[in-house]
Image 1 (cartoon, rainbow, N blue to C red):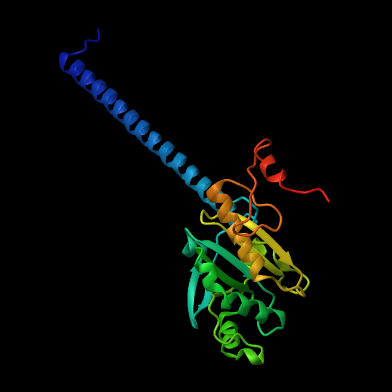
Image 2 (cartoon, rainbow, N blue to C red):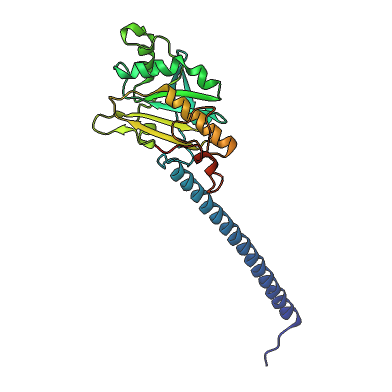
Length: 256
């Protein structure tokens, strides 16, 4: 007859308890690592998703009433080379003046016109920058040429170098056939929203007066909540955007 000794039974009991405890410990460890893995995996997915979302947002084309596409590039500022970005103009209005090429014909007349009147823009919390696909070296060389020889003669606004044409493409200004920008005028308000996008063909110069008028109209609308009619200038009557209240403006018009 087989007899199980007390000592043998105790040993088996201890071994069984040890295995059970060990198994529970292993399960706990596995459970914790599984949770940790899940947490890390979820976090990683969220991080990747956020990166892709930011990347997508950063490559969206310029659209009216939407945040202006960000940019960063080398620029010539008062004769020095600096790195500028859209963030440098936060809380200000910004006029971005795209132009075809340095050392050309209509371009210096426009840039000089904006430069000579830049203080009028700064008086209304607005900055102006010129942008082309030339290098910053070309900007410097062109700026050193006197005005009576087709140069800029000491420009007072920054000249952005969009050598890779990334900014020009984002703002829809690239003339594909020639590889340089059209004459694009973009106005960004102090909240970073794109409010105006005008693109002229290369032969047509722009008006500084009209650009100033547009900035002032945007600012008036932002502050007063009223809209500016055709040919509006500072001091002119505006329209309350309401079916009844707008009649106050239209009542003054005479039929011809």
